Length: 146
Ligand code: SF4
Ligand code: SF4
Image (tube, rainbow, N blue to C red; front, top):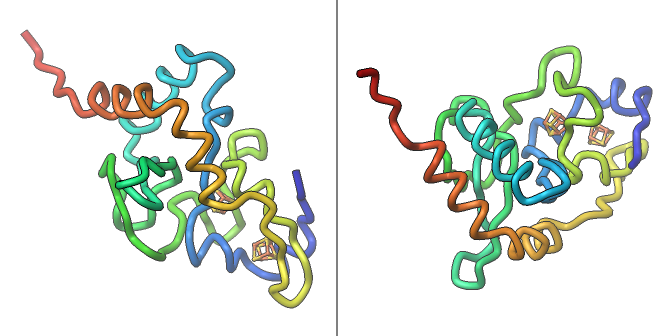
């Protein structure tokens, strides 16, 4: 995990303005049940989406929504500002941030170093694809009041 509040404060969150960080399955829990339940809650909030590197190779990943595009479960914008970015920085506590954000090493002059690629994240999500798609279906179910 790489945190440098001073460098990031001076930068103003250029990475977060360009594109949200990608997650790993472990960001949502330590067991399949926990991951499933937290994914359902995340998708229902409208602030987390499933995106993909290559559908034909089953390379999907989860990331925060982009501002103005909240409320979708599947979303594939190529760039846009993370829904969790405020003018004071990230609104998520550090332990709730995507691994892709925490593995981006802040450096001066926009030379930050990514230590977790989107493809490697997607490969980790491949093991959990059944849970990922079941959670998407569950989140999109409409609750009818009797
Ligand atoms: S990680 Fe880099 S681009 Fe992102 S806010 Fe920090 S200094 Fe800016
Ligand atoms: S979750 Fe936070 S740190 Fe990560 S891209 Fe969004 S605003 Fe930036």
